[in-house]
Length: 242
Image (cartoon, rainbow, N blue to C red; front, top):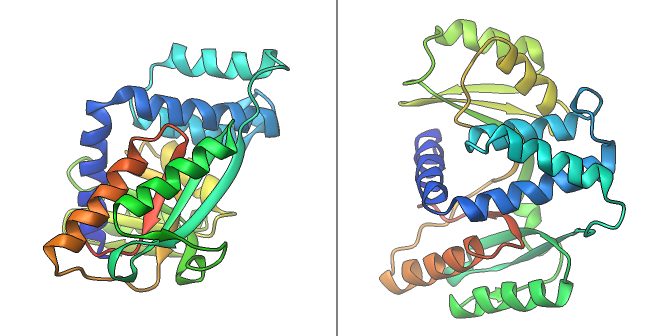
């Protein structure tokens, strides 16, 4: 997928999220709970929590909602324990799909994910069946419209902070990092006041699949929409070239 389509996809996803804030806030709330349980409630000493807070702010989550989520996770030893489960499978015409979930009910989540695949004429596979087609990377997308900095200066800041690659596209810049260096690169850009359209550790496909059949496109969209609507689903990665 080109940087342009990645950025277009992010904008489209953000617009969808704006229409259903409840879903994205639920997703981020669970990520906050997991980050606090793993590394404590102090963002200064918990880089994972800092990253989730940055994601929350990028999605216009109110500060008091963020703070409430941190306090709740820190103060309630009996709060719900979320389990991270990843599902892999195939959509129509062999499109590879990875689904990351955080759940307090494995049976419910497994049933919902299988149903989403089945309704889109796909199927859930075994662990590892498609993940080898993807590479785990830190990915930061910066809108040219919102960033006034010169491309060369921006690239030097990113590379000096530890980024692996910097790509200039028609309407955006893409910064790629190893998963381990993602936090320090994101924080370096944040420290320079650079606005980020999206910043996540993500799964980037090595090759993409183009769908030409209207039926296949309808089916993959059905699967992705059903997964997007599920509160247990945190992220969905695929290699469909939209």
